[in-house]
Image (cartoon, rainbow, N blue to C red; front, side):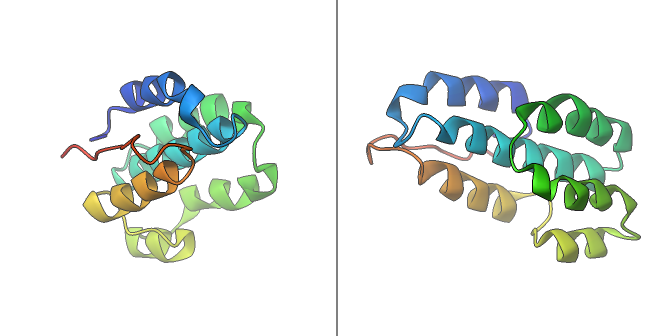
Length: 118
């Protein structure tokens, strides 16, 4: 993945036919965008984070009940607080590996493997 968000999104679309349930695609996109959003905040790119929130996450119209919590991440006092409140390991291998595991669980064929590229 390595922050190549457009490529990751395109890959999800290509693998759509291998999902256990086609409706999982929206959930998977949400998880991917949530990671992108959190990484933008951690990197100090608040404008990018707001753009992601307004133009990508909100447009999915998925898990709208979580939206106020996600919005609040922008107002955390520190990266440590962000990680604690979001229950997130921070940008890097650990959080991306967890994301890949969540995404992988949605495929119907076990031979469809997603790989984390560093």
